[in-house]
Amino acid sequence: MTNVSPIELQKALKDADYPADGKSLADLAQRNKAGKEVVQELKGHSRERFDGPQDVEKAVFGKK
Image 1 (cartoon, one colour):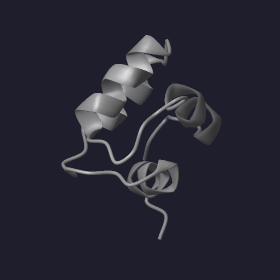
Image 2: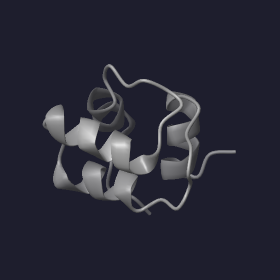
Image 3: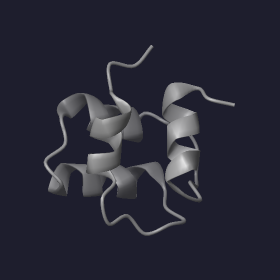
Image 4: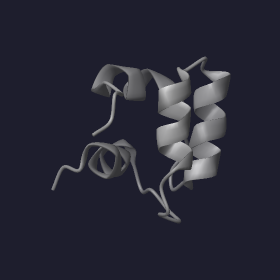
């Protein structure tokens, strides 16, 4: 289970361009001064592509 909140994730992904991969989103999160947990969560996914913020939330929080 992740320690990342949905609000933290939204702030971290501010101004994201989709589709994007996890590394690009993690880099953006760092530029947006996101916490270490958020950055690690984004880097830790094996998915090659995220089509939008809802897609990222599904991957991070396991929503269906």
